[in-house]
Amino acid sequence: MDRNFSAVYPGSFDPPTNGHLDIITRASNLFPNIIVAVTDNVNKRHTFTLQERIDLLQKSTKHLKNVEILSFSGLLADYLKKINSFVLIRGLRALSDFEYEFQMALMNRKLNKKIETIFLTPDQSYTFLSSSMVKEIAMLGGSAKAFVPKCVEVELKKRFRNR
Ligand code: PNS
Image 1: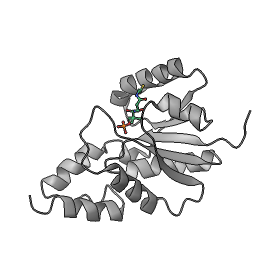
Image 2: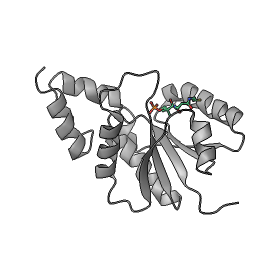
Image 3: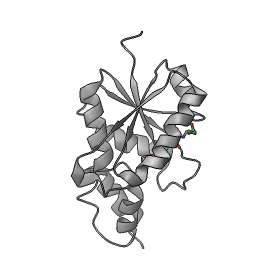
């Protein structure tokens, strides 16, 4: 087994929240290398471009030396094969996440039988937090300060300034 593999934390991160950061930090304490793999979720309409989401994640994780921000397109199962990894990290906030995450974990393993999905739970103060809720708050003139890294707060303000 390659002991230098990277564990992969995939997602759309539109935008990254403190909940994502909490999971990245926990993962970085567990594994020698973490790749945060940013992609477009075909089931969502994104507010931030792929490059903007990568930049925001880079700024928010620069203090974590074993974390790298990369992007991929196509199937996650194929991406893991390509980079020779077999560990997927996903955050599980509440029971409501479970069905989707369980389905995704099993489907990814069907597509690439080496894949193991590891679920991490964020601090309980983040269990209610989601990117879509943060965007809704910002869009309606509320403050996202408590929920996102500073650089994301700034971008959200710019994005929804004229609404
Ligand atoms: O942060 P999200 O939007 O919940 O992340 C979902 C994501 C991007 C990880 C998922 O949609 C994904 O893996 N997309 C890549 C395409 C793919 O492999 N689809 C089949 C998943 S079983």
